Amino acid sequence: MKLLSIVVPCYNEEEVLPLFYEEITKVTSQMAETYPELDFEFLFINDGSKDKTLEIFRSLADQDRRVRYISFSRNFGKEAGMYAGLSNAKGDFVVVMDADLQHPPAFLPEMYSYVRNGEYDCATTRRTSRKGESKVRSWFAMKFYKIMNRISQTEIVDGAQDFRFMTRQMVDSILEMSEYNRFSKGIFSWVGFKVKYMPYENVERAKGTTSWSFWGLFRYSIEGIIAFSTAPLLVAIILGMISCCASLILFIIAIICASGGLALAGLITLIGGLDMICTGILGQYMAKTYLETKGRPIYIASETEESYRSKKAASGL
Image (cartoon, rainbow, N blue to C red; front, side, top):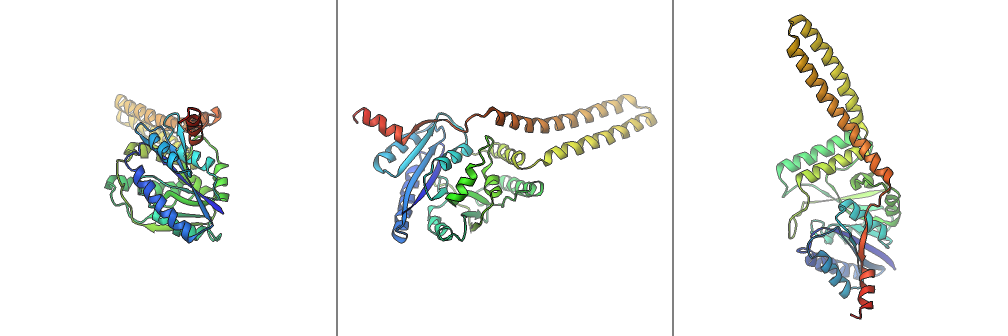
């Protein structure tokens, strides 16, 4: 038998979890008939949810022994949730997917067909459209991928998602990259391996609302740029050179036009602005280095299905 671990990071997903569980169990039952060598486990990660997500996990664990979960002590972010899932998955194959059904479980049989014979190490979906997203958000997303692929040696495929079906070898390679500041889209690409991209139309959430705001995605994109490119440091050098040239030109103009006050004010403003930009860029890299050197854990678990079952057994329930 080969075990397939399905990792599902969750944050306030009480509305959609029953629908997801119904759909994933239906698909895995069909897969078990087609591929009798497969066994399954469902590993849910509760990323500090404030709704009844944890209560649903407990209920599912009571009725289905295949259900496992890890509940964080607070919200650590989706990156920490994926890392926790990959670290604790026991399977020969591991799937990472969202609970909102934007990652359709119906793709799993096809994904397995690409990976099971060793033809590919990973199968993942790639959106061919951004249906349901605002035009502004879509435009920024496309620009991010273009910029990222120009300034980084790690290619990140536009539209590729975190919905991935991976071999144990690829998962173990990802776990070797244990940095605190994680950007999984870049990590998935950096480790290499043979990847099958499956195109599909964007699917909207089955229920509820996304926890990703525009500014949250913007901060996440900055994390990715800093994690996989040193090009912004080169930008700081270029801005410094431009500042020196502009300062020289303004100084000459001030002498010719005898307008020292205005030229001096413009000069100070220019230099000050460029200095702040360069300092900010350097500060971001120093901040990430500082966080890495602290050696803090990526997440802290407050409860698992094992501790829950042990506590329940001890209480005689």
